[in-house]
Image (cartoon, rainbow, N blue to C red):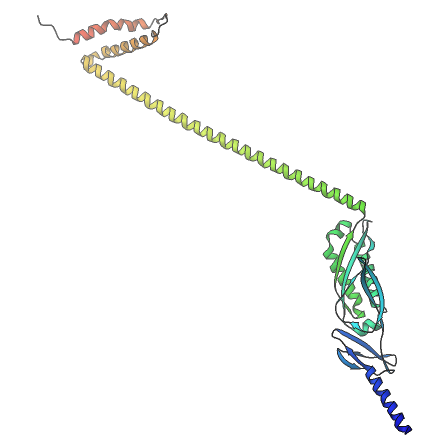
Length: 333
């Protein structure tokens, strides 16, 4: 009877220990199992059995970030399960000094993932804290090699350099650093004021340059317009003078042609070719009379002075009557 009771107790104890040793591991998680204080195996996802007393799960310290009243708060906790997913750490602001001795505040984000749980447990104590301190010291070294302007304009370069350095340093810890991001870069207030004044002065300088260039282009266009206008006006005047000269030339030719026809008509009317001088003298006398008529036109009393050479012309007027009379037929008695 006693044997049955003892056997039952042993069986119950074995069953209880077996039930206690059954462990469910979720996806993207793992547990490091030690047997008698030494590493034995890493549990995969699914149902696993751990022999109590003989095998134990290694406990590690882990860092968590929570928000309290809108501000991040960091707390550390002992955990058994190792998360294999990518983890993001928001490190608190830290003061760093640039190469030109400007103290700035930088807040960084770090994205990493555990690739080897065994190394993450046994190669480093308190992995999250070690990654944070390594990121802070590396950030100080990288920023210390840059000026303030380079720091503000080279975020991608800083992020890439930090990622490479941290990835190489944490490889022996079984960690893969995927990305590093500088969240905020805050210079001191006096530096920000100086940068704002510099930016305002730079904008004013650019505005003055653009305005001067606009005035320059406007003056050039105006000068080109005046030049084109002068050229067109000169071209128009030239064409007008040419046309006026051509018109005067044509008029003179027509006048000369008319006078030639008049002389020819008078000559034909007067008589033979030997009397050309008489026809010419007649035409000159007629023109002179027309001019004299024009000079004496008007109501006012005018005194007309005739040049000495004009008396020769007047002498030809007496011959007009004789010329006309010679052309009349003789009267019949």
